[in-house]
Image (cartoon, rainbow, N blue to C red):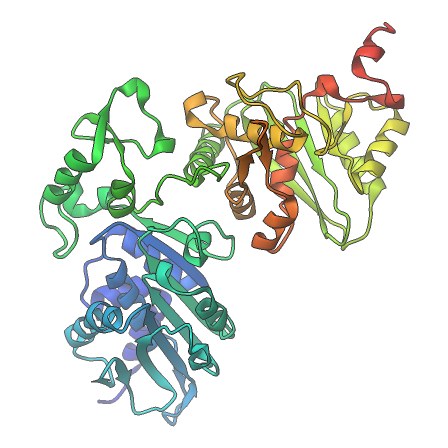
Length: 507
C-alpha cells in the first residue's frame, strides 16, 4: 500500500493524541479515569497508578504500552529505523506476566488487526531487531537482566508493583534515559515500599482508580465489560463497611455516601474498592488522605477567591549546611496560600532572607517564626538589629513540658514534636479546622513520611530529622517551614533577647 499525505496526517494525529489512537486503532472504550492515565503516560516520564480490584489497571497499562510501542519509533524515507523503541513488561511472578499482563496485550493487538509485527511467547516482535515489546518475571537475584535495556524510546511497565523488590526499581531507573517511561500499577496492599512512596513522590504523576467511580457502578449497568459492577460493590459495602451518622462523616477516614447513606470502610474496602492504602500505621504522623483533603480545600480557596482575614504567620526555614533552598511558608489561619523558595546555591544569604521576612513583617499583624538552629540565627539577628519585634526565634530542640495537644491529653518531648503534632491536629478532618495546603508534591511527601512514638514517660517524640532525610534523599524543608508557623509566640524572644512578657511589662 502506498503511503499518502493523508495517511501521514492521520498517524501524526495519533501521535499527538494517544486516546485517539486507542479509540480508532485499538477500538477500546476507556472511562475518564483511564483516559487521564493514558494522557499522563503520553506526557509524563514516571507514572504511578494505585487501583481497586477489577478497575482496569492492567488493561490501561497494556493500552499505554501498545501506544508507546507503535507511536514513538521513527523511520527515514528509505524505511530504515532511526529511532528505536523497546517496551518491557514485568511482574513479581511469571504467572502474573503470562496470565494477567500478556493476555491483555494479545487481545488488544488482535483487535487492532493492522499493527505490524507478530506475537511470539510473551513478546511482540517486528522485522526490526531494535523495535519490540517483551515480558518477563522480575527477579531480585537477576537485576543484570535490566542492564543495557536502552533505546531512544524506552518504556517499563510494572504490574503488581508493591510486590517488586527495591533493587529491581533501582535497576529500572538506571535505564530511564532519552524518551523513557516508567509506569507502575498496583493494588495498595502495603503502605510502605517503592510503590507506596510513588504515590507521594514529586517524581511521579499519580493516579487512583476508585471502583466507586467505575461507569458500571455509577450507572448500575454494564457499560464497560470486565470492570467491577454495582452488585459486587454493593455487597462489599454491606459486608466491609459500617453505616455511620452524617455527624460522624470524615473524609479523612475514607467515608463515603452510598445509596443515600453514610459509610465508613474497613481496610479491605479501602484497598480493594477505593484503591486507597490501609489505615495509616500507628507510628505515621499524618495520613496522606488528610493532606489530599487540605489540597482540595486550597483549590476551593483559589476558585472562590475568598478574602483572607487572618494575619500572616510566616515560617522560615533558612538554607544552610549545603542546602540550596530557603523556604518561607505563608499561613493565614487555616489557609496556606503559598510557599516561597529562595535558591542560594548552598551559600548563606542572611541579608537577602532577612529582607524578604522584613518585607512581610511590615504588613499589619504579621509575625515571623524563624528556625534559629543554624543559618536562621543570622537572619533572626539581623531582624533583631532592625528592631522587628514580631520576629520570633524557634528552636526545635527547646523544651515543651508545658504544652499539650488539642485534646489537652498528650505531652511532648521537645518543641519539634509539639509543632509537628500541631500540624497533625490542624490537618485532622475530625477537628474541623478546614486546613488548606497548596498542591506541592515535596510537601505531601514530607508530611506523610514523618513517624513518631511514645517515650517511656508517655511523651510523644518525632523521629530524628536525619532518618527522614535518608528516606527522602533531601531535607524536609517545606514541612519544617510549616511547622514553624505553629510556634507558640508567648514563649518567644523579641528584640534584644527579652521575653515577650518582660517586654510587655515595660509599657
